[in-house]
Length: 263
Picture (cartoon, rainbow, N blue to C red):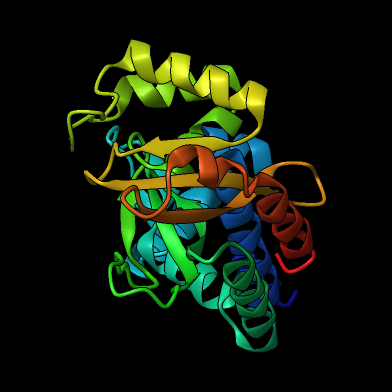
């Protein structure tokens, strides 16, 4: 009598190892950070050569942790607050943060006014570091503060450094509240201003954010030539005319060159 053959039960394919899962998550976050815009699940899956189910599972996990957020179109994803906080903490970590602070401190000693180091955070400017000049009349914005793009020197600089198509698309969506009578509050005017900034290589705040306050900002480029941050000097116009602030351009650019190695 023939023995019944043992039935073979196919085991489900094992989940990818934690290392593989982590690597996929990091690649997804890196893609979104590099792209600088929201991507759909289908885009993410295609760009990363992942099955849609796998991409969906990763996005769900990253959403839960705050590393991703849904865009206005809920089918698309962009970087979330937890990832921005991680980037902020990394940029301000230890020795590198101290070296960047020294660059700002030396710049303040040269120009005699408050200087700051900022980066683009979504649709706002994020203050990464600042050194105050020792004057009784000054504006204090804490590290970690956010300010608008359309009416600040650093913000307009970041817009101007974007590819024109991406810049125009963002400007079309930005709210443009009038902060002072000098604020550029129209998309057409802001686009024209950005074109001027792109040509001259620096940006000015002509009392556009706060009445009585001027600023000049220059880009800090990464090794790839992309603007990653900005260095700016600002001061009350009663103490420093805009023309005098622009006269410090060489010192600002020298500091930006030094800062490039500390990104």
